[in-house]
Length: 247
Image 1 (tube, one colour):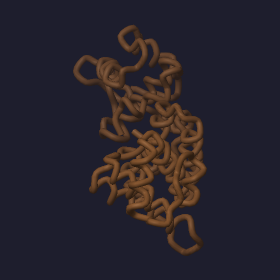
Image 2 (cartoon, one colour; image 1 turned 135 degrees about the vertical axis):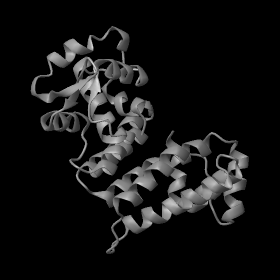
Image 3 (cartoon, one colour; image 1 turned 135 degrees about the horizontal axis):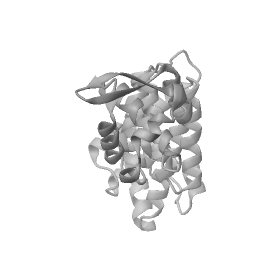
């Protein structure tokens, strides 16, 4: 998760929100507990925040009230840090769960991703996965995100030549029906869809292997059983499928 991605969901918010979010990111993910005005301005530049060069950071901080405090100085420059109230404000602003750094980062990753998804159906699945993650429903998060991933794969497959697509499918399932529209994928195993995508050069072998592992996790999460993935497992799943398919 980069600062650009973390700040991206706030591009239409106020300068105050982006300044507070920059302080939060620097503290949570880069262990910088306090920053000077110049460092905050540098963070806004790094994040490519709207009109970052015109932001009067000192004035914004003076109007942040109890969300910020000044713990000291760095030479002649005042340092600024978020208060606990400020951290709560940013978590609420971005829909981040409390005191779960891994989940916070995953939520931010998915929030940034939704801003770039133009397909409403896929976007809806990703947004559903975010809601699940925010309340700790990790299995449901995996299931919904995978639904978006598979739909994306299906749409990529349909962009291929119809004859080549069906030849790739039938190479791995001789009894598969011809696919000419999205609804036809309902009769085709998702593993076969992944194999066909590799056959057509959409994914390479390593990507195919990772997607098969992700499918296995989805199946463990989507079927009745005692298995519940931990935060690190879900984080790995999110990173893999978003980098390979959704980005």
